[in-house]
Length: 191
Image (cartoon, rainbow, N blue to C red; front, side, top):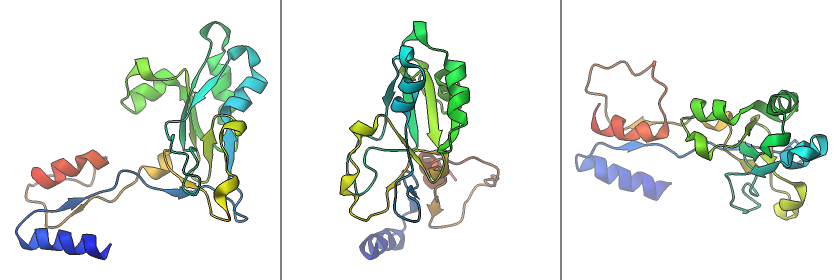
């Protein structure tokens, strides 16, 4: 961090406006005994609705176990259309202790500005202290070796710092805006 700070300081000293952000937050996903708090959603859905043929996709696919083990705060479930009661699944998922939000894919696509044709039938978002995976057999957490599982992808990891090296120039209220990490360009170039 010192090297990064020195480089950013040199850029500012040369007259550059510096704006910095991150791509996502990170949260601990284990209990006080370092046991990961995991919901294996595909296992749950297929045990309760075997006719649905659920297939859960975890956008976090990096299997680096000491970091997040391909487990995250956001997953998509694709279902066999003719056999699925999506509304019942949504309601049951909302009752699970690891779940902050569950919704139809169409609702998630609208809420998070994602293409509907790429969305699952069901979306589940984990609480801050939990992660969601597909099948227990598909996530090897044996290599945690005493490390706390950490991950991201849920609503709790959306808050990020947006830093700027000098005051804003424009008379624009910024306190009411829902800034996102890509707004760093607006912050650096136009304000």
